[in-house]
Length: 428
Image (cartoon, rainbow, N blue to C red; front, side, top):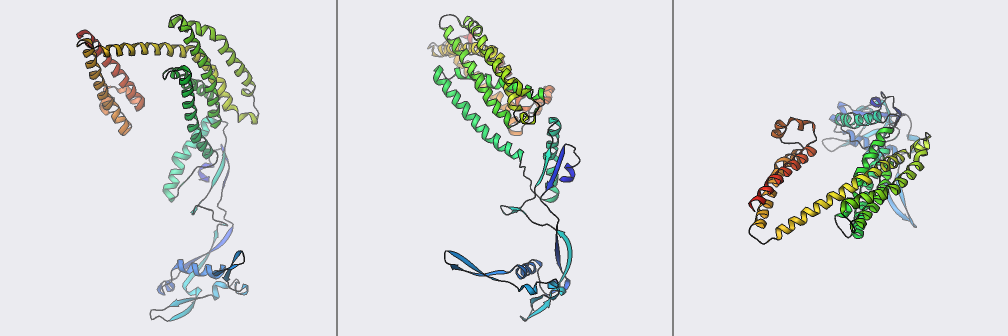
């Protein structure tokens, strides 16, 4: 691993926990030893007991326990220990005799490890080093080569298992906990908004700016060449709170104006009135963080992902709040109007229009379900679109399977709805 990583100039300080600074004696059984029935593992255990001693018994000694150890005298642990050691051998007739150790084993000197590190009963070797992040693209490339090429090949060639630790493990643990925290935070925000607006659908309009705000954060990281990290997640959480706050005030203003006038004039007037507060909120935050954004010291580099996320996320968020939220509000009103009209049609007790709409809904829903099964079924099962679809539409080969399949289902559903429902209205 060290040899393969040493070729990259971005990697420095490579170290491992295998220290070859201790001489060891390697014992191998001779043909005589094998013929006499000796086993190398049993022989090694006997020699270890001779050199290190054995614990014969333990007994209580007041509040503690004491142990009785049987050890060879220090005078016998000399350099010629292996030459004069006698090992007990049992013959085929049950007779016991002692043979010199030198007759049953051969001894070779080799360099050994000064210590063997174990974790949960498994031998562990740690390879550590520093990866320069001056070029984020190059650092990502080296990490990809490490995970996809170097480590899998070593695992396959030497039968070992690898685990990534250090900063990578810390980020993985943080992101795992942060994902749960973000999900709980979003659920809490949704419940609070549902209670305030007394609606289950209105909070989606307010919170729709959160995923759009990520566009600005990702663009900022790309523009400044800063890799996404745990500090970016912290910035995204803070950015989401500020954007949602602006969106709440705007939606509340739209609802207040809509009580006295039409929806479209209410949206225009609300956006005009909220332009200055949203602009001032964004500018004060961005200008306050600007010194950290242009700071070049090493201490500021740790905070740079958070600062980039806040600055670019809020900068994009200002336009999102003033443009996307009003548009989604109008779209929601249009959908609500269509749903209410559909409910009135379904409540119609006549045999004409109500029955026609019911048949249209049943037929259209069945066709859409079949299309979903045909298009998205292969994606769920095998992770790819059906071959006949790719052959029919070659442009799908360069599109991710999930995105392409979902887009096809939406297009097909729109086509089915546009054909079946007008026919049902004509018959009714």
